[in-house]
Image 1 (cartoon, rainbow, N blue to C red):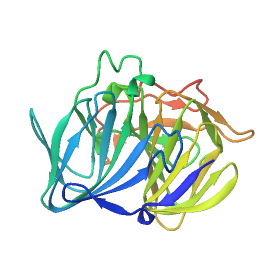
Image 2 (cartoon, rainbow, N blue to C red; image 1 turned 60 degrees about the vertical axis):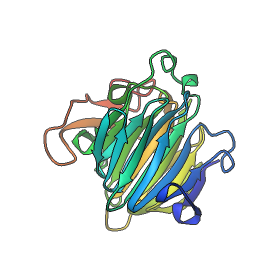
Image 3 (spheres, rainbow, N blue to C red; image 1 turned 90 degrees about the vertical axis):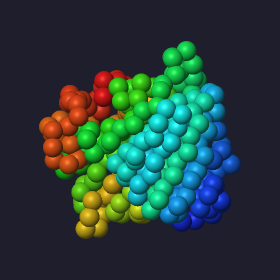
Image 4 (tube, rainbow, N blue to C red; image 1 turned 120 degrees about the vertical axis):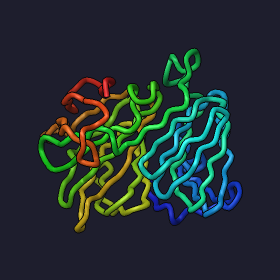
Length: 279
């Protein structure tokens, strides 16, 4: 069944110089989960060592502030619009002069979900999601931005997207077959449903759905509700509840900044047999 909690309820532990970690999704909290999720807070002048196990897939998403990722081949300046994929055996340091907050996720033994992961592991990749295409819902005012996909990161073990719900919008009731996933609310508030059971959600909430649990969100309040969601593995099937409209996503021709996007994505819908792999 769904697991729901706010990040404020999770104690922080020291993690590096002037940095703290909150362990959000763990196998102690969710038995058998394949997603390990942390929230890292870097105070001004902080530094965190990053080390990826040989068989793991790791990514992190900047939520607030700025940081510099230093590694053997150079340094990367990051802002709150960046997502980063760290390859197996990666070692580096994430430092922040003014402070930063990020989500950090690991998929242990990622080759279970991606047959090419062990023989051809991905390299270091950085994506500015604000340059990615915005897709418009055919039925309402919701918007979608893909942030972790096979095309962007060259992996199939995990897939991620950002969903924007203007006030009063809702998704159709549905479930996924072949993947577990979590949602992290970055803005706004609303009501989530799990097997038709409603519960309120707000900024900083994590909602974890196991494989095959029916769910949908309703945005409430006077501002957009925004969340990111990630699936493991990245290939799965979506099944819509009876008499619910099937979501279809149409290219808007713009990115989050209202400019020409970094790439094009064709229209696609939830009636497809499986999750799209050309995004």
